[in-house]
Image (tube, rainbow, N blue to C red; front, side, top):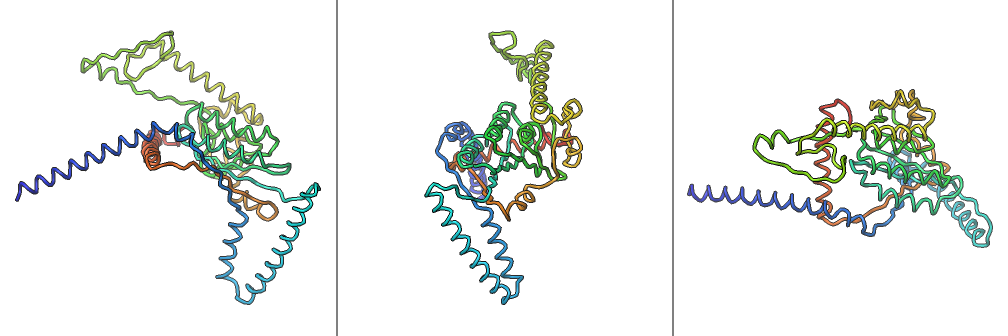
Length: 354
């Protein structure tokens, strides 16, 4: 009997191990297929936020309003809706006849949730393209950016996508409800105006690189590592080889050059900022960021949208890319790894990673 119990325990452990290995391999396979997944056809989803908040208001009215008053309000609302529908048909007829039809201004809302690679840049590109094909004079765009930063080239491209909006003559507002640091702020500073919540984390105009080195560990165990390059600085520092002072110096020079380009970019887009005083790699909460002129107004994205709902048509715009289960598993695995790295950095630095 004891033998059967031990065999069952061994079998359960073996199955668990095999399952874990299969999950890891599936995650790695999905990550490898990410570039192909980005080529799949997606679609734009548009949600009318006026209708959303109207339905919320009606739901609240049903609970808090006197039934008789609610009946009167509904009658008045139906009458108003009929008048609006009639006006819309008239405007449509005028447009068909070649006359210029008046319409309400529109606010297009997008959301950018950044990771280390700024992988949502492709979605942002599709959303901007769709909006620019429809935007008319007087319309505006609001992009809610949330990102602790990441790879320079990824966020540089994301910032360039936002620049398309301004180049098209459409006013752009970037909101920071939680954090827009480093690459996130690189994106934000492109906007005509930046709004931020009072305790949002903003700034960190700096550049970071961390490279672990296992050379002494390999040497201790008599393991050789050989790296062949053509070009003196093809590889400056390495994880497994022996790093030299010359290589380290070159690596730091490259970081300084990148930092210089970052500062120039911010100064070009926000000339009101004292770039020498803020380009120290520090971060500021919203109120202090306002004092440093890194942002223009203390306001949440919700408050900004709420101001427009009465007189504007407000639309939430999203590009949705359908993913199979392998890709979803790979993204979840990658997200868990990135989250763990970010938490380790937070513990070590006492501030958000940048």
